[in-house]
Length: 108
Image (tube, rainbow, N blue to C red; front, top):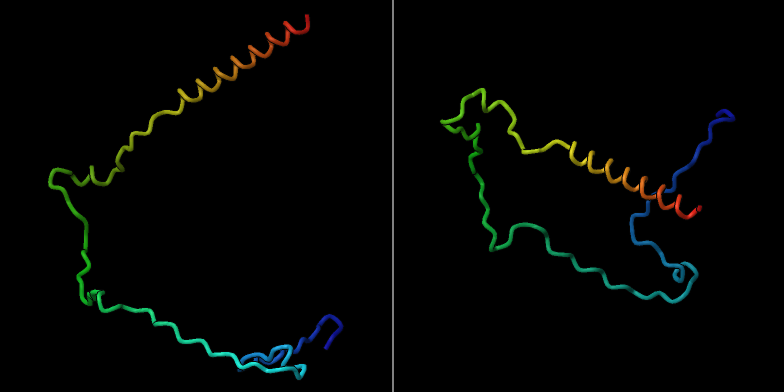
């Protein structure tokens, strides 16, 4: 073992319930009731279990749509953001203009 290596010994994992502080100190030991087992998860009497169900293969085809039209993505109706940009710049310019005119009146 070199100076850089440090060996750490692991404590064994306890196999039973841990001892309380009073039991370890020789105090009064009170027995605790064991917890009851919870019901298991699974289908109840009212649940229907379907074992063999066919998995559909392929897609639904529309006879009026050509193969080239089906390969293109649909248009979602998204519009240009330009009106929002123009409106924002106009409001910013208006705010700058109003702040300069008001500060000019206060100085005089």
